[in-house]
Image (tube, rainbow, N blue to C red; front, side):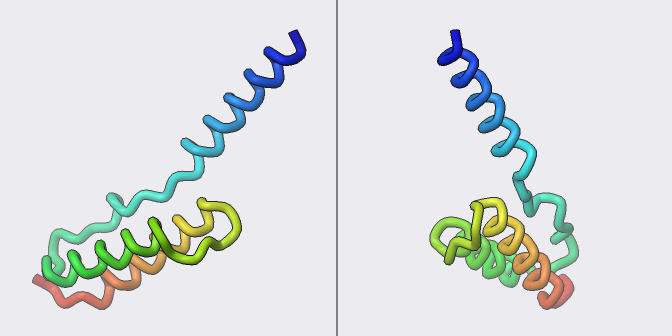
Amino acid sequence: MIANRLVLWFLLFSTIMTTGCAYSITDIDVSHTDKTCVRQCAATYSLSVSGGNQIGFKTETLRASKEAYAICINTCPAN
């Protein structure tokens, strides 16, 4: 009984941590931005997320990577 509650609590906690803390770059508008530059920013973002230095929890890496992506996009020329 106690083991079942611990497993349930762990699953609930894991679900909350993985779904509530995601950082997505899809909300950054790139529609009027040079596509080559956007691809370069996306490649840098991908490298940062997949193999970059870990800053504390993975969510901190995702947050920092999203901020860096937004800055990169802001430096791209308009289309």
